[in-house]
Length: 250
Image 1 (tube, rainbow, N blue to C red):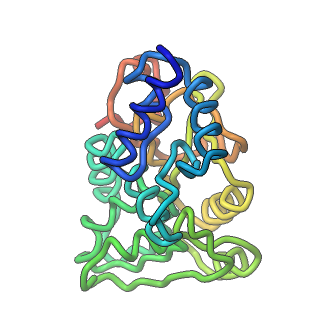
Image 2: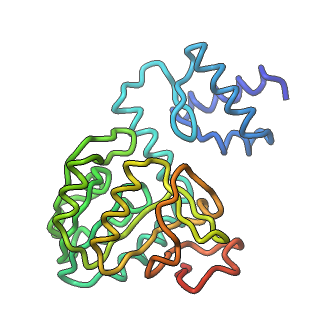
Image 3: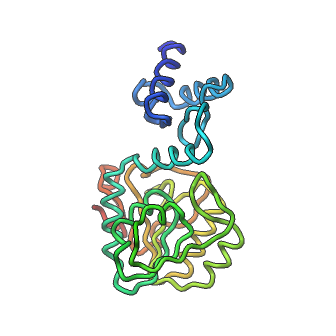
């Protein structure tokens, strides 16, 4: 496919959606992700789009707040049905009066609809989770710190200090990828890695939320072995036929 044809497709999709996913474009055009990445870079240099994590957004008329919202919405919508099943199963492990830590991320944010009317205590550094609730019955403790607008969560020294003050009955952790053979969960950011590890250390039981789109994908940081979790909750897929016993497939 000619570069001009790829450009027309990319700009057409951006004008329709506001934000597009790199992997989706590569799949739709039957080209490599590296080619799409180069196209995005060229178009960004021309001022026609703005690259974001995992994709691109229109550069004109999009403020930073809207760009964050579009980016989060794009991530949330990837395998949303799988994330919904995983979130629902995760909430089934929570008992009345539990104190639970809910990690940042789009997968854990889906838990909000199943938890907001429960008689529990929720500790989180995720603004995205809070914004997904309406008039919650649950007690919410929102931890502050250095705010990452791209991820709608707080990180840093202050966040870490506050998490150290809590004991959790259960912690529900997100990830950006997992290598089944290597028994490893990954995350993109060093700061978020530290938050996850601290929450897990202060929790009696740890659960990993993993939608199948992240199976056998690696990211920058290894933050935990999969076998360290009480359960790894994942929507079923062919890549998990030989998954270890810790997996709870939904």
